[in-house]
Image (cartoon, rainbow, N blue to C red; front, top):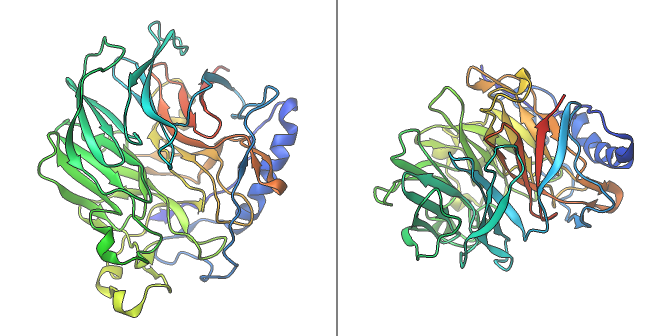
Length: 422
């Protein structure tokens, strides 16, 4: 019987100057940790719906001040890779080591471009920064395949000519797939190993299809297309808001981080990390975490036939954590326990009385499968839990050519670099 791992708070060593941050982060996490334990996905123990009142607790971003920065475990060093940015949301590292950063926000007002950072001597510090693409529409996912550069705009996947030596693209792109727009605007993209298929993560248009299931066409899915945009099909469905995607090392299995539904109480529904089965259905909107039926679905909308085959995820990442970023560590610079495991950027809650998320967690893997509970890896984003003050909000994660981890902090307008230096 496969096991689902529930988020536990781990203890990390903090420097003296971050004692205040440590206290705030622990205070925010303590309520979570008390309720989490390892369970199986068939008999998963979740609280009943509305066990607590649904609340709106939006964080207040105060920015990084007075030398504050996130905190990593002992032996790791955190530094600024790039700052003074404009809502850096997602990161892509090309084969030549170039680092691309997509800048955008949910209102479509910030960024709307892609930056290129070039680290010619591979020391983890970029020597140059250029504006690679402009006039984009809420860009997010990026992908290089041979001589093409693909961008996941909110309304389309767009193809551009790619020259690995260039520092900018001036020509117009070609839309190869039109996509529905609206709530859950991010469009992440990834290719298979053969480089002949592109997978597109498209989140739902609503919380639980409250505006009608007909408005969810081609949404709450991972779509598969050929590299020219033809041959579209639904690869997996019932995923409320799949965002991060990556292939588990040594396997042909796609994994995704999914942002689950809101307004059922503090501890429902857990966001999750799951393997993605071709043709699999994961419950949304009719059920959550497998076959737990959502009580808000109206009788005329219920689909017991779909609920009966809903797939339960492997790893719970905590309720309302907004687990968005995902990358498997395929480098060799981090200690052995991090090899082949998954780093997940948690953008943080708004629908919980105590803040949850606002950190990067790590899920160990062995043999292509989760082998332990999620662990805190990069924390210190919460400034004052009682006031809901945060310094920033981590989203995208990526591994640089030198084996260090990059973390996009869209609210703090910074990309952080975490390197192992012990």
